[in-house]
Amino acid sequence: MARPLEGKLAIVTGGSRGIGAAVAENLASKGSNVLLNYTSSSSTELATSFAKQLSTTHQILAVPAQGDVGTPAGVAALLATAKTNFSSASKPLQIDIIINNAGIARNAPLEHVTQDDFDATYRVNVLGPILVVQAALPYLPHDRSGRIINLSSVSSSTGFVGQSVYGGTKAALEAMTRTWARELSERATVNAVNPGPVEGPMYASNTPEFLEGIRGWVMHTPLMRAREGVDAEEVVRDAKESAGRPAYTKEIAGVIGMLVGEEAGWCTGQVVSANGGMLMH
Image 1 (spheres, one colour):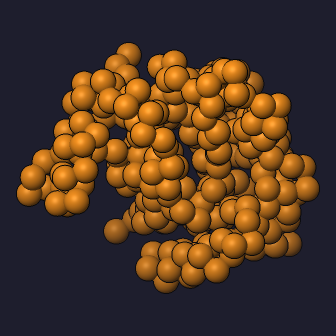
Image 2 (cartoon, rainbow, N blue to C red):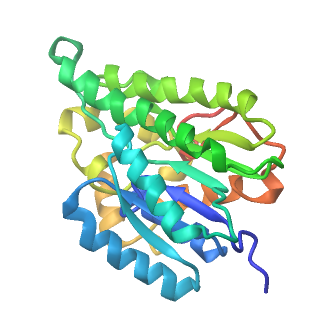
């Protein structure tokens, strides 16, 4: 059976773990080759092993690529890896899908926000996607078949306490999404998705005070209600304390997987709610 993304190339930043890894798995299962970007050398073994797993399981080519996407040098290394592995003299490089997933969060009340918090978060969350898309521009399709997905967050709209910087970066990313949808309209659709709480180390690192602050939001999010017999016992138990369960990474990846398909070609410039109903538009 033909797979809808057969032979395409996707770049997934922050692709070795969390949402990025789930997205890479989703795309690979549909036939897309994947370039898995990661930043830290401590992730090299994980990214290499994951790339081999994807390649074997889905009969595609998955390649790890180290590089800090918040720097020109890191993005240059990423593109060099793409050229080496996905192009030849007879086959020029084409980048069909870009998933701008890499991001960091530093929560602090206004009076404790530092310039380092600001610089580091905006460098990765805002400058990073700009540099990646700039570098990829010469290699995007010319028939509107390209797909760019930016990972935003409900934090761009909810005003969570302590997220002046993080929420600001995600609001900037949503604004960039709309601009790129116009500027790149003959090359690619450009959309954002905005998860709420998602399983993984970023959510687990939140302080009890922050979690208490968002408890009301979680309580009123329809799909965050844990279900006995469906969700794992640990998830159900934890949900009793936090008022609901975080999203599974595969659930966010599923929404992204829909947006990169041919059928989504009439959707661009949108912030697509992938948060279980925490935000409704």
